[in-house]
Image 1 (cartoon, rainbow, N blue to C red):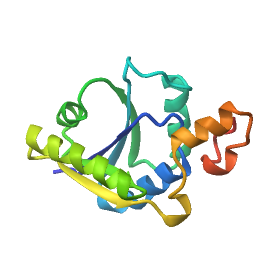
Image 2 (cartoon, rainbow, N blue to C red; image 1 turned 90 degrees about the vertical axis):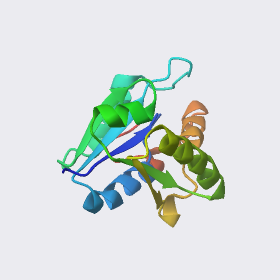
Image 3 (cartoon, rainbow, N blue to C red; image 1 turned 135 degrees about the horizontal axis):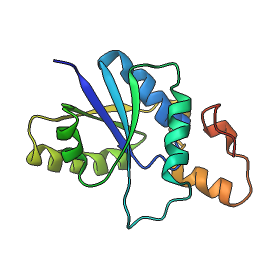
Length: 152
């Protein structure tokens, strides 16, 4: 059976921290689906197609990485894609506590899907999409936190 992992998020925008987690996870899985969650209740800075294009561009040479857009529960999306793994990156203790709760709930919903945590490389631990959006919103240059194919 093919080992498929889903790496869910809003990726508004994708950062070097996200890219690092995905690249480090590649040897563990046959396929990683970067799944852009679309929450109609949430206000995004960048539209879905823009985010999808950026992620595809960041992994243009990695045939094990695909990009998709989904709505609803992540666990339902995993079931639909026959993915038995959820991939999550952790930067700090707060991420761990938040992600642990979600992983435990997902396990209750489907005990055949495992959540795999990878710690972010130390050099990317301070980067998150919220801070990157704030830099951009206030006219700063966020290029050093983004994949090379993205220039805002």
